[in-house]
Image (cartoon, rainbow, N blue to C red; front, side, top):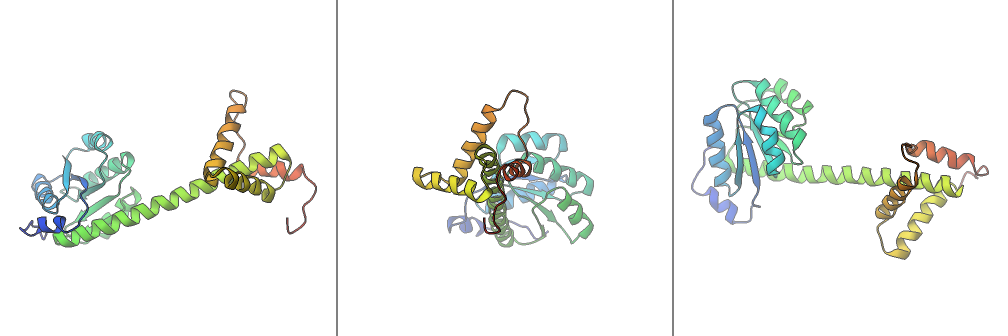
Length: 228
């Protein structure tokens, strides 16, 4: 196995590598211990070492790791179950570690939410792979957040269209102007509109979907010009 801790690995951490809390999981105890040595040698904290599928979810939820490393042990199905449990509980990327290329396993791991995979490598390359994965994971969540904010803004526009009998452009202008005048982010204003609307709904009433709400707003106004 190429992942063998060496004396200078600790220096890598002292030269600016970010300290991470790492969960490692592998069905093979010998490889689990070896990987733990490598991760510690890179200056990171091994917060958990798991073998049993039934235990890994609870440990993940309790420890909140920055990254999880799952090695392919004796059984690919066992490793896939580990990945599935960690992904279900973790808000961190899961990286699959392989001793050799295995396209079929990688495809199945991807279906279960693994964020990256690494074929046996050196500690330095493992650190680089972790850094790249964390960067991509952060970008991924930023993108998810952007989509979430857009959805809230669209819902708030629909509410304003319905309440004021205006079109989408005017509803957005209301949100934008309120944001500028009060110094709050547009997404925060939209969230406040949506939450206030939900509080005013009769108990048991389901809020309308943004598309349906916007449609009501359009029907209650005169036909807008193409530029409106």
